[in-house]
Length: 196
View 1 (cartoon, rainbow, N blue to C red):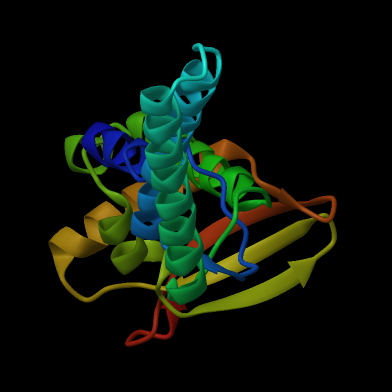
View 2: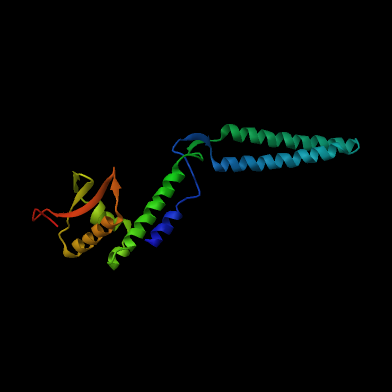
């Protein structure tokens, strides 16, 4: 379970993106525009430096050439911005970050609960195995005064039944509540029609 938690942390928890989509240019186009802008700033600085020199025929020619290069870079920027393909992206913001952390907290709480079991197999169990043995099984719900009982279909194999019973014990020790009712899990043997 520890490796599963580490794997969950590695899945982009630093990003928080919304489910809303916006039309924008791609990152490659943005990078090219930034490089062209940096080149424009550099060439404008050169034009300003040439403008401060004494006005001679040679200086004026160099100034005109440098100003022409600034115009070329600006034309490249305008052409790139006009021809840039647009794509949909998910912008920063929203509740995805909260959902990811709630998922991580739920996995952590599950790992701590499973660690209280006396069975070594249950302590080392991961979420898919738990779902297969207990949470993904069909269940019948009975509402009683102050208690909500879930009768979960028991598995047929003895080893699976033993692990399933250990999981039921773990969840019953947690003292889960739903609408002021204590949640209790029980195994129901469908073949014998007798609850365990």
